[in-house]
Length: 234
Image (spheres, rainbow, N blue to C red):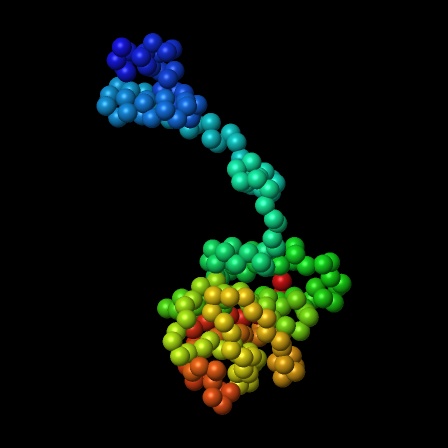
């Protein structure tokens, strides 16, 4: 019995092609019908007919976001139970997020989820910044939760021989204040000095420059700015 005869004998071509369009066929059968459609213009026309007919149903259903537990349930069934890790500990997750507005939004949500419930005062001091620059592959995410330190996560960037990345705080028209050398492709925590604290807040700018090994010789930036971003309240 040929494949064409077989497809007709299992309920007729229209039904089989309709099931194909709806994705109801098992993988092997789906592939077989796909080959038949590719070789037969009549079956191709039948596929187009059913595709058009079923497409009209799309407008009757609004898109819906699946519940958050669905992904974890699928992962558990596929891979078994795994140790739960916080957003901050998931470096691969942060590297997969494009720096910019989307990174800031997602980071802010994740950051708030992993923190203990703060008081009202603490909420007003939670800040975030996405650091990047056109033409540079250096991207960082900076988070400040009011504890006196900025936590940095490297999203991308590579080591440069005999050079270091240095973080700077820029507040208003004041000269940049060095916050120290920071590692590439790693998480780090930078304590805010009293000088930085005095002007720290919404509108402050964090910048990263490429400096000689050990940092700028005299506490003044000398290298190119490879990433920068304004600080925003969460």
